Image (cartoon, rainbow, N blue to C red; front, side, top):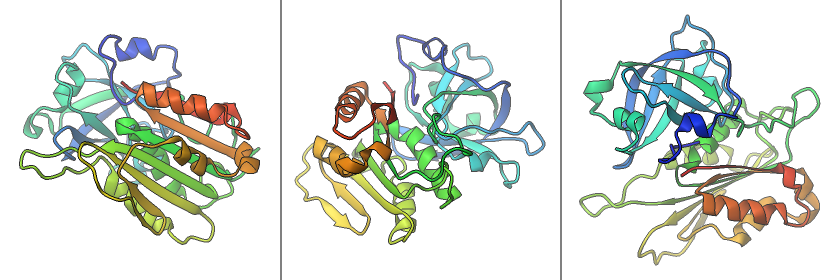
Length: 301
């Protein structure tokens, strides 16, 4: 749920998805330009307003004044950021440039035109962490969690990783699992000067991985797969992070889910282009030792 399908309006495509009751209002308080194609927006919530309790991985139906089309954008921040105990309770959205998508086009206007403007939204979606099959009372800490993202499919995964990171180690499913594997594949674009651009959330993901490096309670590893033309670099490995200059392959998936005798306790989330998502989900559900019901996915177009 990271962007709109051009042919099917978001609100129709997601009509069967669960929504939280109510509508929230927010102020567009901050715009960070990540690269030439993506910007990250902060929507600040009133401290004395209705509390927001979204789940990691959910999206918003975004209502913009004077625009008839409802926007569909994933919340990339963790639920902790929207708590009214924060100095600036907010949600965060990563918006890809899309001139034919009216809500995205509005959010890509000059910052001086849209900063401090008001929007409203509903919250929905069922691609969430912890898995909906688990309850805090019946289940403790997860054994292994594998998060796989392609392109802006990182958006719900970023919310999940941030939420676990903020919660820390607890004997509940919403905390940091014993073993975590994050696989993120993205193209690194070149700017007009011929240099390379920043990849969405690459610094944030590295910082979180670094925090958990060498932790005795959490076996955490982050691998970034950089794609693009003309790569002739060798893979880089250091500590609990790696950079591979290629696409994610099947061996990477098998390594991430671990030995066959422990896969029954693994949960896998996949979010990316439909071709990647379909391929990986089909493979993982048929992999010996995996429980197909624990392979969860969401596609973006």
